[in-house]
Image 1: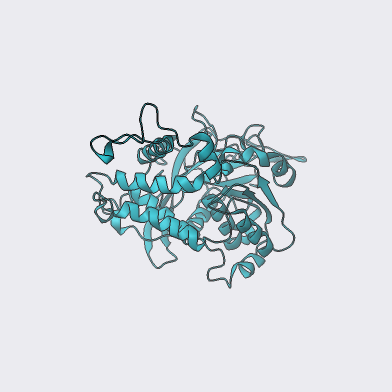
Image 2 (image 1 turned 135 degrees about the vertical axis):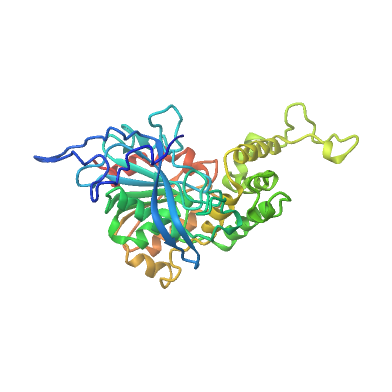
Length: 402
């Protein structure tokens, strides 16, 4: 991702009430004119301040910045805006842009794709507490030191409130659609419940209306893996050794839940990794070779350790643990009764982290009859990323109809 400091680029919200790309646009006879700002580039990270934020759990942040990327051009009436929400360790790079870096939903977003960036203005924001440009534990506090252990507890709802301020700065009063998978789906659902007048369509993929006891238990194991790393230092490890072992272990635990047992068995079985022999350890048990599946998990851990902050992993994981759209609203059904969005739900048929039954439960809690579409994927939960193209046709028919 290319990151652009907002101080070096014209802020797209500097003219009050004027949306991005629409300052010199006009509505013609029966058509909408789209004109791109000279400084606007697809798929380039920008940051903007959204002010101080009082948090749901009682803490506060004196100044919040959100990082975001955009694709396409906003119509003069701002009616074609789409917000796409990333998952736990995801980033804002949903699709290819000005550079060559692929996006994590390239099958869904881009010119001519179901979310056609020649027709829609797509925004993706890094979640509050993240490490891809938004204010998080590795960010500097007002005194110039990393927040570290002093970064407050945040919820999904807190991040959505910050994202609403970003929408204001972009001149977007109502999203044509808010969509996401996994934790991104939780954020999309929270948008529909918190701001019912600001969401026309809500697409929730591979998650239910709340985190279950089992999902919280799995998340706690990941959080403790990091906190018990000798280098974690209570969260104040910046400038010293990083808690890479703990973060890597957390990733291994999580990744097991992201994939299915049949996929693991088909890809790896009981085979050893290359020349390594898992049943040979002549001197020390720690010398034995690895199974292929162990090597695979080691690789996934190494990739995450090289791109993600351990404190952000904890912060966002605990935010996902808090996910409960009905909290403080009289339960899920009452919370969703006030929503005005048209919902599009989907689950992954082999998901063993967010079971399809949870999507069915969410559908029953929504007003009216809401079908649950099924992604057919042997891979498990990660099918919401790898097989998202299966939903393209239905999304074109029901949500993205321009």
